[in-house]
Image (cartoon, rainbow, N blue to C red; front, side, top):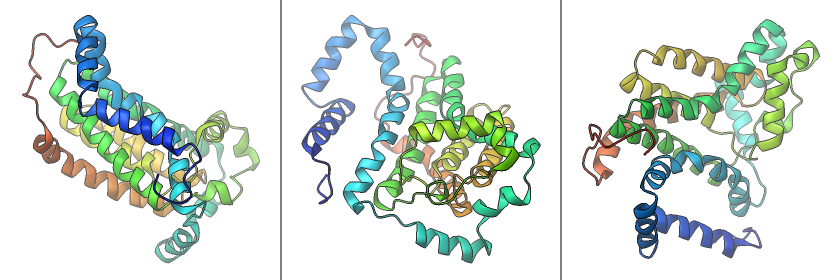
Length: 282
């Protein structure tokens, strides 16, 4: 909000962030208000306290375009990314992949895998939550939020639009597929410009796969297959440059590796994973 291209309503936006931060960190009087709510609706407040980081992801994502515009004034780094893409891959896979394999039997599963991102964000924490393993749930949420945070820093200070904004999508018979049409409809209705590099779709999916490897290893291979399909689908559908997916893989892996130690270092409450009072209702 200190950058010259900030929106006209920046005081309101800054105030909202300060209030949210005060509540998240338990600053007074937010702490007293939370305690008052907790005494009256303990289950609801505990459930909200567990889930609010994930609940607010759509709002955090939606403001990225406002924030990166405040920083860069609408300038994007696609030209640089395209040069990197050419140097690394000797071409532009986001523009040639679908043309080299224009098959609906391939397009539909890849677009469906790309859409599975929304389930990937929420389902692994939910499965852990339903097992009443609160410490594991908190670490899982911490891991995925760390991945989001790392990617969002890039989106604010190094915005890249991605090929979807610059080039036409794959067409022909592919455009008649249900998953193809749904993927484009979702992106057209809710994408945040400047949030392409690194691919948070890939990075978060990788982080969630690492979470399942630790806490629900039997399901990790399923998520691993979806993650591979998601990364391929992001490039095949022209949603991301291939280097976006590669960078997302690297950043998501790094976040997953440091998250357990960082979680333990920052944790202030005792381990309550075996607390008999913990329930899925809060």
